[in-house]
Length: 225
Image (cartoon, rainbow, N blue to C red; front, side, top):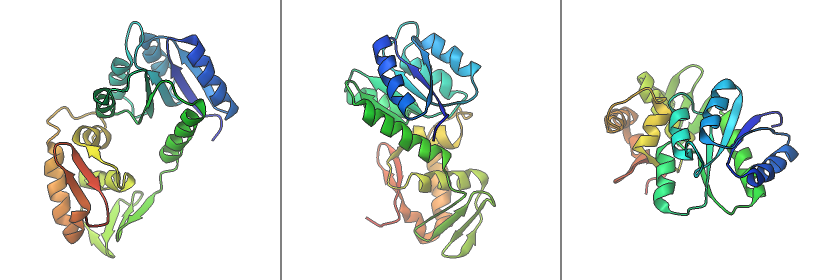
């Protein structure tokens, strides 16, 4: 997994060096930024950044704003670093499309392990995914359930693929919307409910695999609770 480029954004030079040293040992290329404004500029000047490690508290532009700016145009994985351990901050991060959230102080080895796990998940997505009798072929854009073809719209297909790829993970409506609609939709996140209802009806009894998490969103699990 070497030669992938990671941007480390933190106003503390010591922290950037610590993270950079550990990433370099794993053969990652690292570029740095010491404030939010520079981070945004650097990101858009480089089209090959594979992941961003982003501190929350920074001068000029904080990590939340940097995340918002980048998420308007890119799905690049983002790991947020913060000195706070407030649950509200963590929820805010996930609603903004953050992939991981790590509180300081942290183990650099654990951070690198998280980086590698996210990049494996991002760069090794399978063309065909199978779960609970559902077979989804991304290349052919076909879905079969118990060997019977199911006719899905483009967004229904993308939604089901996202659910299966995140099996067992609780997903907020905002995160689903941001991931499946690629940040180009500015309507009500409740549009998710409409698409889920249609998708469930087309899946027959397997529609029960998409569980509602009241007040949050949905979770895909092949086992009936």
